[in-house]
Length: 389
Image (cartoon, rainbow, N blue to C red; front, top):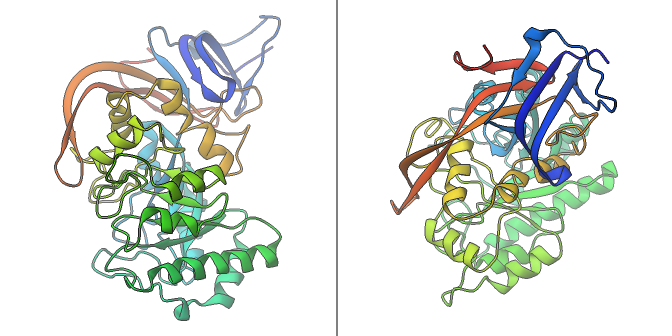
């Protein structure tokens, strides 16, 4: 078989295949191919020696903000490719009034594979000094339905923020239940699942009461946030409502952010056996590539290494699991034959440095992920000057 690239001798970690070992990968056109008989032809200049490196599926950052042409908080998505991210989900940067502009100016123009949540507030997240109004009486329901129908292949669901100062403390849960109701209405109209993604930092109710409003497949994001009501009770146990929500299929996304991660909450939850389904960065312009809180997705992953999670668990949370939720199972987030050749070759180096949470608590990390080469759909999109020579 004639192939375009061979990646040889790397330590391949692929949670979708439950594989962690030395393995060669073969790329033809834009996909990974299976070579059963070992008879391979390839230009010698396109044989990549990954000895001593990690070879991973392209990472999926499930919670970012990338509407850079329409919001002051958003980063340019393709800037994440050198960091090993080849697919992402924008978590509600745009609402129904500007989602078309977001799709045309960013999503359709990017090398990165992008899916989205649309915020229920029509304007989306425009600027940190302009707080959204999630009052259900302001929902432009007809236009939301029109836009969702037009872009349903890209949209995963709707987004609401549920924090003190953003929703009223006395009636905040009605804002969530009304958003759930809107999702159900869209499901009836479109005949497909419409998830609700909920920002949960410093919620005006208990984490369990909030989780009780959510359905299977809805996203409880910032699950390790440490402000106000957290998922961990005073006794160190996980809130019963959170456990019941997980049992019925609610998805828990760590969605780090600068103010949305509490180190003590994470330690307590992990000690209790409550691991995140998804690990994401919540990247915005105020933290992108800026330490020590949330520099990038790789920075966040190194923190979970320091917290004691094993490599397979960490990588599943940024490959296989988000790919399934995005409808990309078997296409992205995997190195199986037939998948798009989104591949990252990494160094996993010793380095001691500090990461901090929202209240300046510190964790010392001893490992750092350093991308050497990133391939997007069979094309080398990034390579360090000293690798692949």
